[in-house]
Image (cartoon, rainbow, N blue to C red; front, side):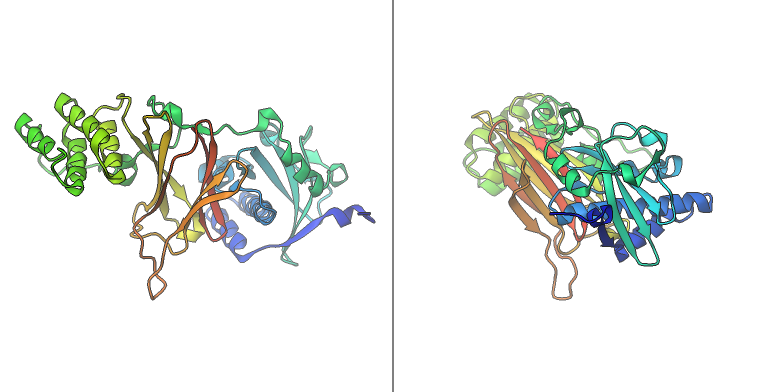
Length: 388
């Protein structure tokens, strides 16, 4: 294709209503009008680049960067966007009247590249002017930019130092956890501060009580009873040798997958270093305006298999004051190349309200595989990359 001028390489996009609402929300209650305008334009630039990358099929973590962190927005001039598995882009805004694009010194390293977005609020349009892999000063000229077509080719072959490392689930089996991943109990039922007038002291369960529950895990009981007993042992059997042995036996004899999962997770609670212990962790996901400020929890559980593979159980649940999942919230599992392998969506009732308390999927990836997990609601996508 032959281009008549550099403007033929520019990509105009509409400024969506969702982007404007989000930018206005982020710019509210800031200390001065200059800071408010800075945050407003930065947010529009990030949303525009995010929308474009979604159109061309490149996954992003819209809310993973500092531009989505209220404290970081206040203290820094940042407009970053994480490209899943590759690194962080800086999305720098400029007005039509500006002679150059300003790139503050604080964002001039540890970036996959820089995209310049021209904001025209009168026309309700944001234009991608081009990109550069690096910057050497605070004044970036439009004439020095490479085209967005070049940028897409550049993403296909990322440099090794810019690639984001996946979360290694084998380390979780060694009780080494990545930042942001908490116990499910701590995330969904955090301890409450305050006093009730008297201090309640939990009584340690007696050996007789533990033995009675262990008896319910035996093969002559129904799978439903065995599964329930495994859950109870996970709450009362910490440090108890008999409880650990019962859960290991249950893992070997249970016919039902649900029962084996419960046994593995309970074993992980009472004997976290046991080689057959399951691990369960969660992280909060803020989907911004899509959830009116509420969050959901992405829960990931793993269970080691006898053949050396790791089974994975993914689940999304409401967090905080959210009672049910919003309709059409999606949980996806993708290959390392971005192909969708598994997908489940939250349902709605006859009035269009959410009806699911949780959605989830189980699978067992091959050893050494990488996979992506996405939680998606409307135009907002959260992505994590894992390796087994």
